[in-house]
Length: 71
Image 1 (spheres, rainbow, N blue to C red):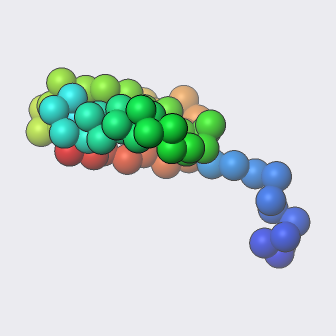
Image 2: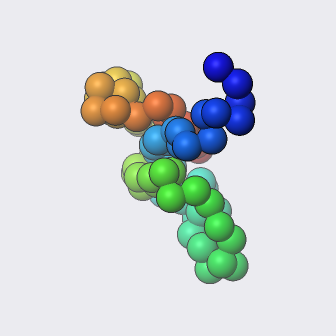
């Protein structure tokens, strides 16, 4: 399978962003009208240090192709 034939597939990415640092950066990117793919979903979490690993497993179980935990 070549790269050219797989251009129709877009990965579904779930981002768990810390409320105090990463989510503020994503919010600032939105205020500056920066674009990111529509298949990226940002979920604000209270703190990345207290993130439950089961949320990551649940995201994969529900069809996510990748998960990013950002703090």
